[in-house]
Image (cartoon, rainbow, N blue to C red; front, side):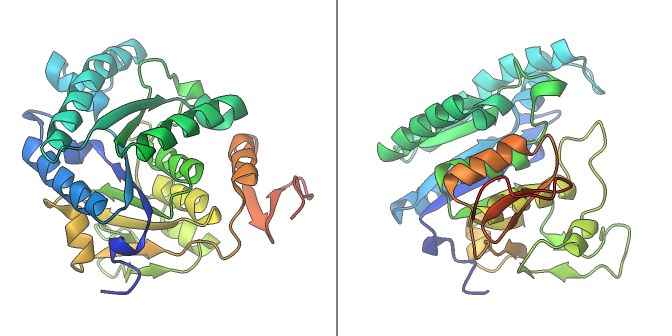
Length: 303
């Protein structure tokens, strides 16, 4: 285990949890796993660490509650499933956290909430107030109103925006993937696991492969995209498997995971917000502290 992995060295941690970890298509909510996760969260809070959770699972849980057939859903079916599932998901988090006398607060965000300045500030103020009073914000995309044109579509990038918005110093992405490999390990038996990533280079991006399919809302591609957002703002990132109980404790005890170093010249909060807002129009990178639009050839903000 390296000195960078112990979670107690961080002061504010955002944890993203994938749908498959929380919900079984047939059995519904994985309550035992959720209880174990909440025990990990309680242990972090006992060390004085602020914890925020970006939790997928609303649509998956709603499908289970409504007993919807497998396969792709129409937009209105997904939104109905989200409406039912979000209530059940929030209740599950509240009940599990309350075992350790921790209060949960639900925050539902859309793309506009993190890209329009006024809404961004309001969302940040609400989240910071929850943290101030000792609550754990449970954050998800507002799938009941988001459409394909105005949505994140995955919670990896949403979690990175939340980490940036709240000044977190660590983002943990938990899913069924235990880290970054040089190639997909299920396709290439010679794929090498990468434990430490000092910088997200074009070569690192290439290892993530193409974008997720239309039926998938995640994958390694979105995790690397999340890493670019988080590390540029000075936030470290860990990709780890959440398939075992107490996955946060497992990271501290040396379970396999990939750690991404934060940028040595993080963008300020204001520049990060502008970078995020402009990202839909074209890819951005940070050059000596200035936000630069690729292809434009000029800095959008001074260093």
